[in-house]
Image 1 (cartoon, rainbow, N blue to C red):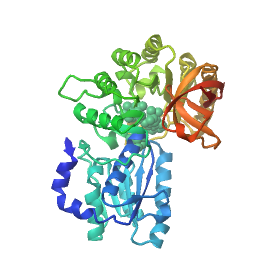
Image 2: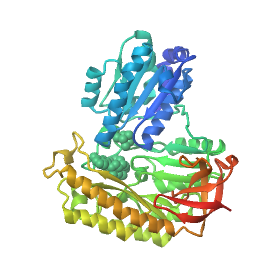
Image 3: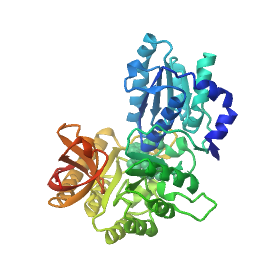
Image 4: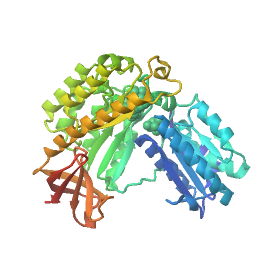
Length: 463
Ligand code: SAH
Ligand code: SF4
Ligand code: F3S
């Protein structure tokens, strides 16, 4: 269901008007775990806090409101969020009027929400992923009623909030959510349980937002969705992700479009043809593979085979010979044998990805894979993980060397974190590029001649 901010304001109008007085002179601090969807949600939460008068701080210690937006994808992400939540206790002791709000995918799981309610009594507010739009009202109620607030509703994960303010972190790169949720139920994954079913925003809403971003000078727009390329399947109109891309490309202006994350089962030739023909779409495809064995892919419920995947890559390279390709890989999925793991290494070599995001399988409560027999021992998972990294590092450096002595277009993002004399940015293919230049270039496109390649980045000179 589409929910308009204006309608929400009417419904909770009284509270919103008063709530604008709540944050005057106060500061909000937000910490975000997980994926870009979560980052976009945090930007909306901060946007609403700013409407309520809060100003933004990067210092936890001086905050009057702390928002921790959590992730549930792997155990590690949950542990980190819980440990940070634990650290808030002493902040609350120093500043009793501090409000601590925890939201996101981790607390959208009932067992985690219950645990936090009971074991972290100083947490003031808990709300799940579908309650983001109600944040001002929840916060207002907490402050005025002096009572902890829990907005956790497992039934309501179907909404599409529109018109929420968004505090964009980056002045030239913007997230644009085009759809929410996931229907795929890969057997290892928690996302469908915490983000609800797939639902697409109306194209009018998306195009309006895209035009606004371009007119404000954003240079890179990343379209977001858990399954971004299944956009439109739930709309009444016959309009798919490729159609949306074309309409966004038609907006006049100097900008590039990226999108994530795509599922191979929905990566159509039409989409690849659209990428090839539209200049504004960055020639980078992040296409999670997960595993190289057909038996494992089937057990993961991925709905494609290694042959299908390889044929997609073949078609992409036919249309865009120098496309940048990246992927996600999971090692140690239950029952994965040594031979099957080697099939993953083989397909990495066959494809030659520019880069991979590799993960050790982490059992998630409530998912089918967590209950499967044949869980892989930690030491075996760790050993496979290391071999995966070693294999990919060699491939990455070979791929990166193909950029040497060639010009590449880069959106300059800022100063390098490791060398303050170097500027850094990403090229179209999403490779990190470092080069010498001046402050004034930040936020603009430049051409760089690549002089040297390393495993994770490229070095060059401004042309
Ligand atoms: N919707 C996207 C991204 C999902 S989460 C997609 O379909 O690819 C990002 C990545 O986390 C996944 O691609 C997968 O590689 C990894 N992941 C998800 N669940 C995991 C788990 N239980 N253990 C380890 N890695 C996992
Ligand atoms: Fe998770 Fe699979 Fe959905 Fe991606 S497609 S979010 S991996 S269930
Ligand atoms: Fe994590 Fe939720 Fe994203 S589980 S990866 S923050 S959708």
